[in-house]
Image 1 (cartoon, rainbow, N blue to C red):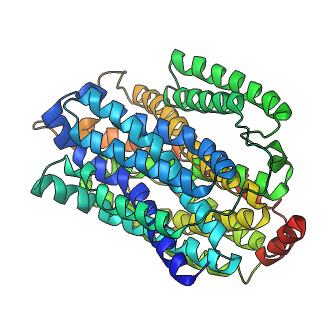
Image 2: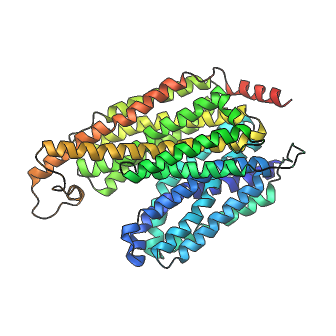
Length: 492
């Protein structure tokens, strides 16, 4: 492939990654204005939940389908579906329409990121792939900073509709560049492609049930969804054992590197994304800062994550990837442990230091496993392997948010009762927006109780982080260049 083609494809892929990364923060910034115009505050959360459900459950499907039918066709389909959903969201006349159109947008988004990463893994050598992982991390870092700014500007200066319409500009350019420059490698198999329909249905329904169960954790419906997920995923295992071309090739899980990568993705995603979801609440409700300060508190973590990813991609070419993973996870565990020591006396600058340690640790390990797995697997499994790792991180994050949230609710109610505040007598919103005439003594007591509850909650981040650290010791020894040689040897 010519350098000009590679540059055009890379530009298109980076644009699509930016779209996927910035979408959440842009929409979150605009939602108060959307609710003010469309109403539907009671179903507000479904604007985010339906997008997450649609995008997460389709990730593994896109990976396998791209292995069967080619990256280009499937990538273009995902991008067109995402942009179609974006247009419809901008045209929504009520909240129910917006939720439905966000589902369409999410169905497209489920393929954008994993296929972009797969294309990067296919067109670049292991050395350049490591550098590209750093660039991708940089895109995520920039998006976390500029996303809220873009959303705020569009809402204030134009209208909330353009939060969705704006996707057409970079999205259309990305589609054109990849369509024009990318030529799929021919399918190495002469056999007729057979899509594993049964496996695809079971995987989608199983993943959907699992996510719904995690979102409803603590409610009776949550346990029904979890039971359904176990049954569906068990059925998937037996179906995939017999499928001639399974949607989720089980032979990948017999590879130690891939298996460790999945365990790491789930556990590290649990610890990291679960923690990040509650840091703003601690800084604002317990420490009594503003929403702006709460947002600033996460900025050093984003920057440290980004910089660590950039350097981690370079280090993986010089040092054994197992050693880099262990070092990164040690930092993540230290940061998670320090978060269990927070209290109402902790400063928000201290919290920034703790979360930055976690960010460095996560930034070092995530690209290492992606690069290693993409280097080790054969081309026919590249899309499936990439999307499965991405899926494991998303599932881990969902588990973390749900488990930590359920624990916080229970622990807080227990400690408030011990402090003399029965259930239903305390409005935690007063900690964020103090009401005139509220007692400072009562507020201080509740802040201390909430601070202790959240410190206890962060043990549910430390435990999976520690297990993930133990898991990475099972990572095979060696360098990624050796994995590349092994992969080439297998193909030959």
